[in-house]
Image (cartoon, rainbow, N blue to C red; front, side):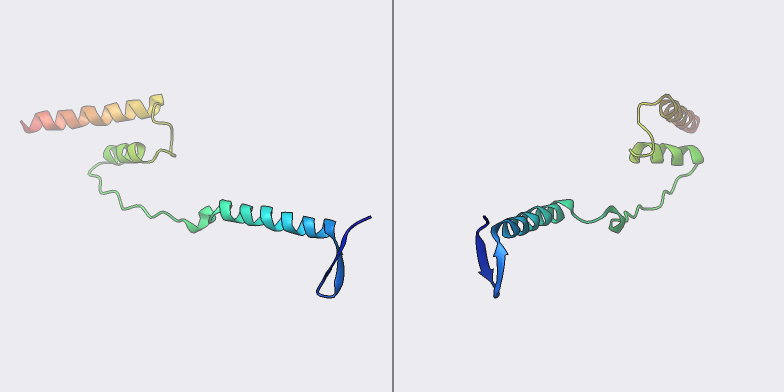
Length: 94
């Protein structure tokens, strides 16, 4: 037999009250922990004012960790190319 409670003039079983309390508890916890959706967080990035396409690639590679892993061969060779060209430009000025 089930214990019956009288709520708002209706007889409600204790198992329905327990399911309601647990649903409210877990549902509220889920909503509180889930936070806002990522679609609402549109991150604005400032424009890249690079003097060359190589410099722009370097900036994107260095500051965007989601574009590609930083230790890949392609990124390392691109960074080295940029740094070599910057060294050549610097040496030409002196």
